[in-house]
Length: 246
Image (tube, rainbow, N blue to C red; front, side, top):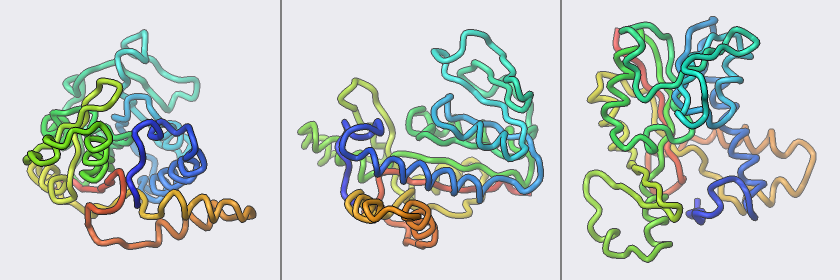
């Protein structure tokens, strides 16, 4: 998939239809990944996205760790009673082996540059046999952002950890599939799979959606039926699933 300009990554602009498809893929992927039985989940997506609500509708209880700027009270339970929001900057408030699954969508491990600390905490709070689903910025996205800002020297000097400055002043961490595997394995997790979030290009998505009908559902099925090799030449984001041993 061709790199997407930085100013399109907020879901607006000419690529709006593509982001409709993208979020439909995330929702269906999460639906397939969620535990079959009602479980206790931890969501580290920071209040970004709709994934806590989706898990709650599926019958799960969810602890949602919020960005400090998004929650005025330290603890808050929603009207359904299934979601408990907490304002915290780490997982020290949770005991060991207390949750069945952890969702780290919305590029959570890229936004938190010290990803080793975060994934270590994830492994700690997971019950044996528990699973985690994570999404990160890919190396191809990082290189595209650097090239877009004319940071050619940075492109020539990329090392083991790639930190990418964005036009808005923020910094995120980008991963190869190998680095993402190593990150999770070092925390004691068994990686089930790593893949690009999407392999269909925006132009392909636009073309198919223009045909109308049930094209969006067909596109999502096609995307999730595709079994790409673990390569870093496609996809702006990588997504992985891993299980805690035992």
